[in-house]
Image 1 (cartoon, rainbow, N blue to C red):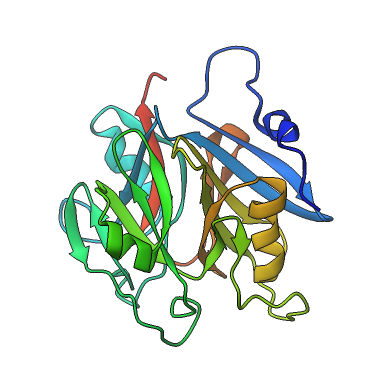
Image 2: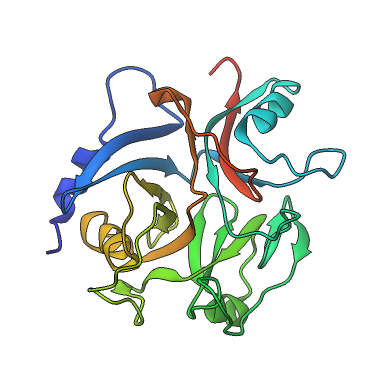
Length: 248
C-alpha cells in the first residue's frame, strides 16, 4: 500500500525551537521498527569520510568526531556508507572532497554489490542523489562526494526487479533514499532483520523516495547524538555524515 504524500511531513515535521541539522526518529512500517534520519541536502553540510590526515581509515564515529572537533566542528549524524574490503578500502566508486579513490564498477558480480542494478550516492552542490550506476556513467554528474553500493532498492519508483517477496534472507540493513529534486535525503536503518523486498517497500511506499540505495547489512551502524545513539561494532570503511559547528 502506498501512503498518501501528505503523511510524510508528519514523520519529519519540524519540532518547536531551533532548526535541526538532522532529525532522527523511530518509525514503524508494516510492523517493522526503523530509525529514520532526514537531511535537508540543499542546506546541510553532508560529506563522506574514509581516511584521516595520516591516510588511516577512521574506522568508527568517535575517531571521526574527534578529528572534526580539532577544527571546531562536530558530527550531527553519521552512518556507514557502503561496502569495503578487509583493509577498509571501498569496493566501488568513491570520491571524497573531489578526489577520486576508486572508479565506477558497472559489471555484475557476486554478492549484494554485484546484484545489478546497483547505484551511487552522489553529493553535489546543494543536492544529493541516488543514481543507478549505468545512468551515472551515461550522465557523468558532478559529485564532490560519491560512494557506490548495491543493490539499488528503488529505481524510478519501482523495486529492484530481482527482489523476492518471499525471501528468507534477513539482516539488519541500512540505506539511503533521495527526492527527485535532490533536496531531501532520508537515511534508514532497520531495528530488526528485514528482507530486501521489505526494506525497498519502506522507501517506495512509506517514504515515497523515487530512488533508494542499499548501503550495507550486518555491519550497519548509526550515530545520532540527538537521540542518544552511538552504535559500536566492527571497524567501518566509508562513513557518511552531517557536519555542523560545535556551537550549533
